[in-house]
Image 1: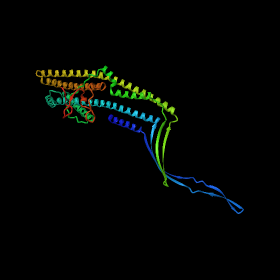
Image 2: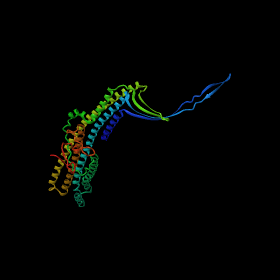
Image 3: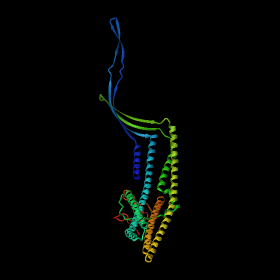
Amino acid sequence: MSAEDLTAAEARHRIAVAEASPRLFGNALASTTTDPIRTERYQVERITGDTITGSRQTLTPEQQRYNRYGANVGVRFPLFGTRVAHDRKIAAAEESVAVARLKDQVEQMENIKALRYAYVERYYRAEQERLAQNFLNKAERVDQTLSQRAAARQLLESERRVMQTPFLTARHFAAAAKASRTQNVAKMRLLTGRNLDEVQLVEPSFTLDCAVPGLVADRIDTHPDIRLHNAILMEKKKQAQQFSPSLPDAGLSLSVGYLKDKEGSSGNNAAIVFDISMPLSVGELNRSQKVLAITEAKKAELALNLRRSEYMSALDKSIGELDAAQESERLTKHKLTTAEESHRVARLRSNKGARGETSDRLLSSEAEIYYAANQHIDAKLALARAQIDLLGIAQDCRAPVNKTASDSGIDEAQIIGIGSLQASSNTGIVSQKD
């Protein structure tokens, strides 16, 4: 999902930049104004000849109503704290883009590791299937021989069952190997977007020239996961070191308007408005924000140190597991060679001993070869997995391989990891260059 995360981070950065730009605003107005009614009282005097008469009268004016219509449009420029908040949001969005890119690299490495795991499982489980099938090809002939000997009372039923056990074991191993192979083919299809079930893959082999403990320890900070944690730390430290008290939110607005009343009179206006606001508890706000910035930086530093320690511990563990896997591979190879020699000796003696006895020894030696060969394949699989684990920490010795057109963006050469692979136009991964 990191590719999508990167796209989302880039989109959030563009949004932050757009939101920091001056804002266009406007409004429309329709209003009705009614003048207040003020009643006035008057003293009215009349003079008739020599007579003066007076009276008080009340006058109530007619109520006036005014209908006005208008519109305003303008631009508001963020200032002070508002501008700083926008700048911080842009900086955070830029950092999220950088972090998303590093996360994408980490996910690519994890995908390559998962693909390598699936590759070696698919290859060696197929080898075990073929080994079991070759051994099981003898089962029918051996069952007939054992049945004939049992019928002739040359073999006890318990002995016959014991001699059939290796074939039952081989069937069990073959079924388990097939299930594992099918599962890992599905994983490879999921990771690459290609059907690799029928592809003939080469035996995996990995270059570990760069997996020298001292060299790996020196290069640990170049690992994408460590770089990711370090990038987060640098950003948190920057925020803590460059912390500044919160400024009042403010803005400068420029607007023009147009007015028209019911009688047809019209006019216009122009305005420059400066607005400002800030919380009453600005001191507590600044102190809390500073404590938060310092705490976040310390947490990021602890996370980086912990991640680095985890990788160093994983490096020691991987090297130990690799040594053990190499010893196991040598041991099982020795056992296989010993079993093959025992089988050769049993065949030589089969011409001199009793038929039943030599047949039993020969069957037993063939079963021992099968068991030893199956164990040797398990050991080679464990060795390949140990090499993959070490490469996941040490990183590949060769230059990064460009992404292919597959959905996962993983080059098939990264599955094997041994320099150059020659891809067939028919199958994708077939043979290794000489």
